[in-house]
Image (cartoon, one colour):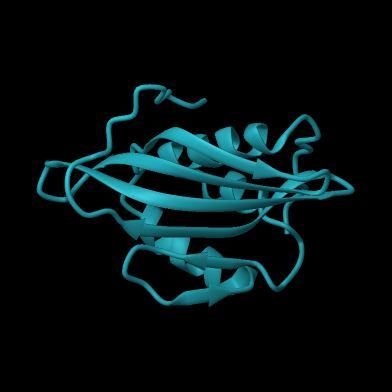
Amino acid sequence: MPTKKTHNGSAAETEAAFYDALNRADLDALMALWADDDEIVCVHPGGQRLIGHAAIRSSWAAILEHGGLHILPSSLHETHTLMSSVHVVIEGATAASGEPAHLIATNVYAKMPKGWRIVLHHVSIAPGPAPIESHAQILH
């Protein structure tokens, strides 16, 4: 496994690096952000629960083989403690048809000795139009 870059500042730094790696289709950078724990979990929209590095890496490799995803996270709702942070974001994306789409993602981070790492990424398709919030913000 490649050496992991340290993201000690915050879970938000790790989240920004996660979406940057997705948008650049950088599988190694993406996987370097996950915790070393084999109990990590990823659920893609409409997909099965994937547990562990091998299953998660394989799924991202298949998704990213055609290039980056062009996802713009916004409307962060964050809950955190000293050692964990739960982020729920709206992911703005473009559907295969070319139409704008939005997804709801839950990203869970844990503070590890080498910094903040992803322990769970769960995305679901959101029904209807993207929500409009008066205090909505573009993240990262």
